[in-house]
Amino acid sequence: MTDVDKILAIKKKNEFLVGKIYGLYRNEFLFFLKKRISINPDDILEIYQDAFMVLCNKVYENKINADNLTSSLKSYLFGVGIRIAYNVNRKNGKIPTEDIPETIDVPHDDEPGLGEENEKIIQKAVHEMGEPCHTILVKQYWEEKKVEEIASEMNYKNPDTAKTQKYKCIQKLKNELRGKMVYQS
Amino acid sequence: MTEMEDNTNLEQEIDRYLEGTMTAEENESFNERLKFDPELVREVELQRSIIRAVRNERLGRIIENEERQLHKQGRIRKLVISIGSFAVAASLFGVFYLTYLNNCENLADRYYVAYTYVPLPSRGGEIVSITKADSMFFNALAELERGNKKHAIKLLENLHHSSYEMVAATDPAIKWYLSLAYLKNGQKKNARILLQEIVKKPNSEFTQKAKNLLKEL
Image (cartoon, rainbow over all chains, first blue to last red; front, side, top):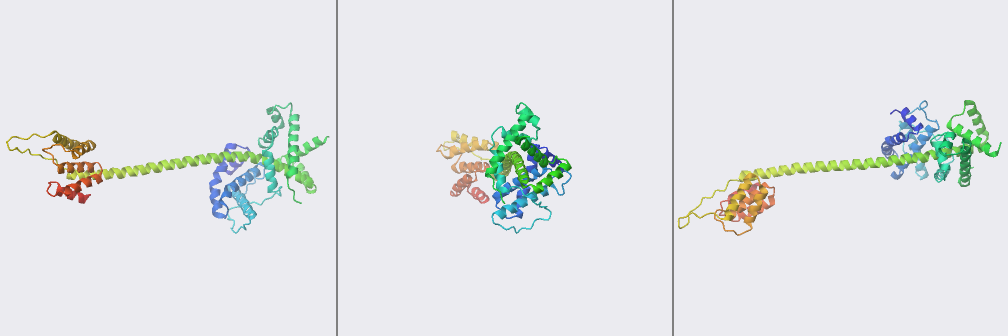
């Protein structure tokens, strides 16, 4: 399986292959990070999982695709992992003293984002969303279904009803989040 | 246009922007708006984070599933390694035990000589016939020669622990052949005890043999 094949499998959300790609680099990464960076062993697996999610999201957002891949997928994944590990250490008051291996391309975090705390709040809110909102969002953003398909699968009268329902769900979620999130000036 | 329609359109616009499905012109124009509209930036970031959260939830399930599979495989691998190690250990033990048995049997065979009994006439000139216990003794030796070690041991132990009347077989002879039977069966410790008992009685025809065998043991 080449890197391009892997990118396509992630992009198409082939859950079986995404799982296999996750497993492919798992042990090597755990060994690599343990050897390179002084870090709490309990954090390493979580760092790998976060790095893998970052990689997948970059593929979904088309920031990584078959045409713009400059380093290997593995190198990118390990680079993201190192960056996350440094952030974890920094947060725990540890100053990184290790040299970044030359073979690893550590990508910069190119988005300001809403901050780690807010991301956690959003993740929790999505997880706790009731029905039918949760299913609608999954069908829209994970399964990438058109509003017509969502209407048909969820027995809405017509696509407009499904669209309105989705709007209501998003608004409800956003309103809930606005009350919980921490904004930095 | 109602507020709801406005918001829906904005969301769709943000969705298209985040999916990268806008035309180049639309994308450029949207980027321009982002430069001067912090509220829009915040909306984009919020929508991006919501979409990521939905994806991460699903990715989390895939990862959880894969972790379960990996642990299962790990457990199976450990089990296979354990069974493999046990099989190798059992084989080694088996080889070792068979070699040990073979060595014991060879040693016993080197010392084994058929028991000869020459009947002596009694005072009255008549030949004293052998007893049932003597028959059992010769039977035990025949079993030993045929390789039925356990049966031979059973018969000889029976004789050794009893006080049957015997004409042909003697106590040192029973001890000697029983010790050889033990040795053939790999029971070195039992054989050694009997040989030491024989050595304690210096006048027996088996005393020297027992001493020699003890040395080799």
